[in-house]
Image (cartoon, rainbow, N blue to C red; front, side, top):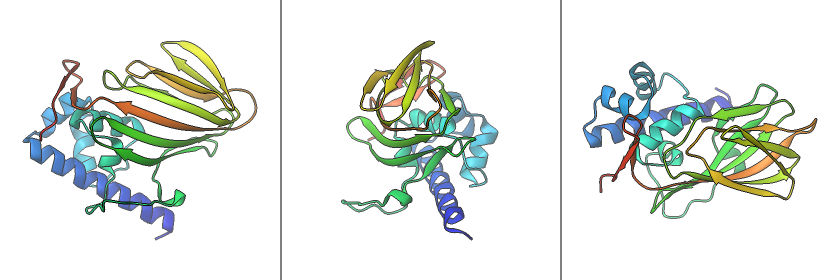
Amino acid sequence: MTDTGGRVGAVTSAVARQVRDLRAARGWSFEELAGRSGVSKGMLVQIEGARTNPSIGTLCRVADAFGVSIARLLEPAEQSTVRVSAADEAPVLWRGPNGGLARLLSGLGEPDLVELWDWRMEPGEALRSPDHAHGTREILHVLDGVATVTVDGVDHDVRAGETVEFHADREHGYRTAGDGPVRLMMVVVTPSGEWDRRTRSRGPRPS
């Protein structure tokens, strides 16, 4: 198995274990988690069986339902109090058709959920994201190139050296602007609590 294949397998296994443990701790059936997350029961069965590598959108919905960060879903069985991660150890959770990728560098779970991402998008690539849990905000800092950030159907061009912050609990997306690649850092902050997409309400996480 290649190093890349090994990392993908480790991510798939970690997600399977965490989703299974989090669901069991709450006493939720697959149907309950499917309702809360908006992810189909069949997909959840595949995830817990480590038989699929879920998309970034699916991971977002499952994490929101549990009231945890995506980083929590990727945690190995044991965590130390201090962790230093090499860049190539960060899981790649999105790949663009032209070679772009997004790595989840780190995440914190208390008191709010915070994630740090490294995005590299090649010309012509784009990602459309559905609404996140209520109260979620994103901060993007463009390091190279020009990114077009669309929020509620309105485009905002963000150039190298500029930063944009917005409410991400509505439809949004990112794409390259012009002929060059884009690199940006992203911070995602989500209020603590389980998010139920059926009622669009937030409940406290189990202690």
